[in-house]
Amino acid sequence: MAEMKKRLRVTINGERYEKEVSPATSLLDFLRTDLNLTGTKEGCGEGECGACSVILDGRLVDSCLILAVEADGQEIQTIEGVGRHGRLHPLQKAFAEKGAAQCGYCTPGMIMAAKYLLDHNPSPTPEQALEAIAGNLCRCTGYGSIVDAILSAAKER
Image 1: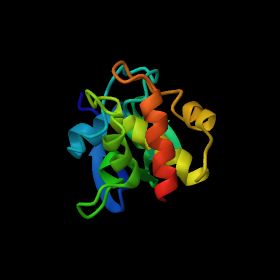
Image 2 (image 1 turned 180 degrees about the vertical axis):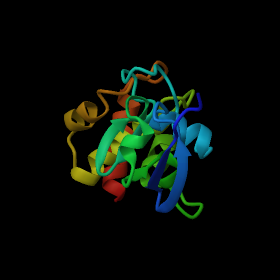
Image 3 (image 1 turned 120 degrees about the vertical axis):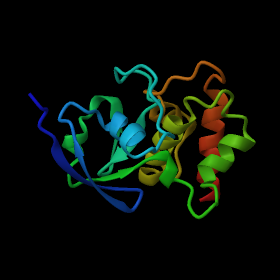
């Protein structure tokens, strides 16, 4: 028996998309496989590492835990939508300058979590920056340089 697909309409990084998807497809798989937006990474697939973090209708979410059909009619921002028109976002620039990205695998999720923080609190304390990335794991840098990057980007905004 053929699987029943669902029509999904979303706005991602300001661009409208309409696609047929399996009801079992995660938002992460939809972004990476169906739309080739591969900046969002799959780390654990269980919502524990934050590598797949995106902003869904103003909420920071782990896209591996959301079904694509649950995003129907909503706006999504991925790492591809952070820097625009060939220009780095202050967070991206600060991550590079402060050495907050080594292997880079966690970086998209970290930047999305940091962006969410700065969108809601443009002048965070170091403790607030650390709390904002608490759901994101990094095995390379430790978190000091990441917090420094977030605080540096906050000053640039």
